[in-house]
Image (cartoon, rainbow, N blue to C red; front, side, top):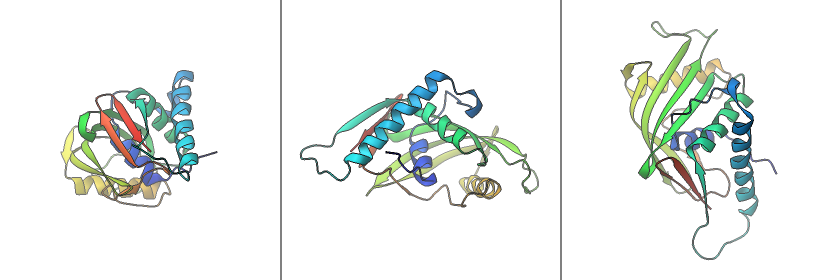
Length: 194
């Protein structure tokens, strides 16, 4: 069974988990592909179980930051038209994350002062409520320059338009993948509750 990967759910899950493995899509190793497949298979299993009620406490699956970043790199590689070229997350306790994204908007008409390739660094907290998750950004940097969240949102919209994706706001909440009830991060881990 293949799990449908919505952009908002992917970004929310990505936003939950964030940074050091800067997994470039072009550099996916065999080990990274195996780690990505393990997480994808678990999401498919959870989705398949979503129709069966489970008495008792929520079940959980735990994945390492390395596995999450491999899965994110696999998602990036799977969509070569998207302006997002890299996404890596560093996970902390209490759903706090830090992340790095490489956006390539070559060929797009950009506002004055924007480069076609930009590194975006961010710190945020993922808030999960009623089957949806949103990312509350506390800091965003464009290369080494701090920028307001509204400017980061504008960069995201330009990148989405340049990549022929539906433009949305980085502030929007996205539905969790089917079957998931909650997400939690711990230092170096993401815990999926279902």
